[in-house]
Amino acid sequence: MELPTPADLRQRRTDLGLTQSELAETADVSQPLIARIEGGDVDPRLSTLRRIVNALETAEHDVIRAADLMNEAVVSVSPDDPVSEAAQRMEEEAYSQLAVIQDGIPVGSISQSDLVHLDSEDRDEPIEEHMSESFPTVSKDATLDEISNLLEHYKAVMITEAGETVGIITEADVAARLS
Image 1 (cartoon, rainbow, N blue to C red):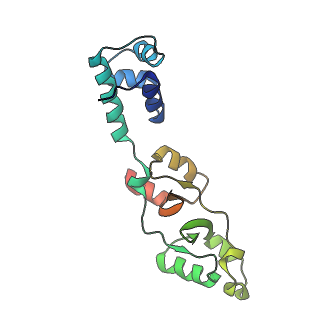
Image 2: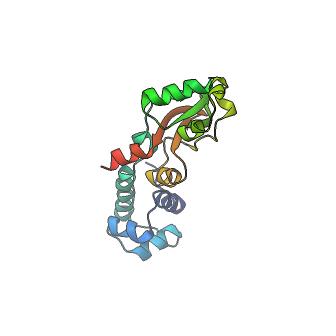
């Protein structure tokens, strides 16, 4: 068993978004002790270190990650598809926007508001001529807080792994999880 260093403890605590006080309360130790351990000023007893690590593990299990929220079946269109295909797919799926994906990589998005302003002759044009910027991408390890912050500015968040799209999260997914 390898013991965590003071820097490891500090990094893990900050990654979880915990303050020293919150960690101290959960681990049943004082906040100044957490500060001194993280600063390398004191070597804690093994029993104290175990309580701190257990508190961090408990907090880690309580964190909701993108992998817990995402839909693996991503309904999308290709940039080469005609605009009419995007409109039809949105209608069939009852979605207001779609990801535009090329070879597994998100390259844009198209929404009903993008389609509203088009003339009937534009419906045969490729989606890439009318698409908007891509939804932001995060890894499966992204936290609910990170995803919620992105959803304040974007209609969806794409989940990628090694550059490939593996899922999507919308506000509806977050709402369903929290309810």
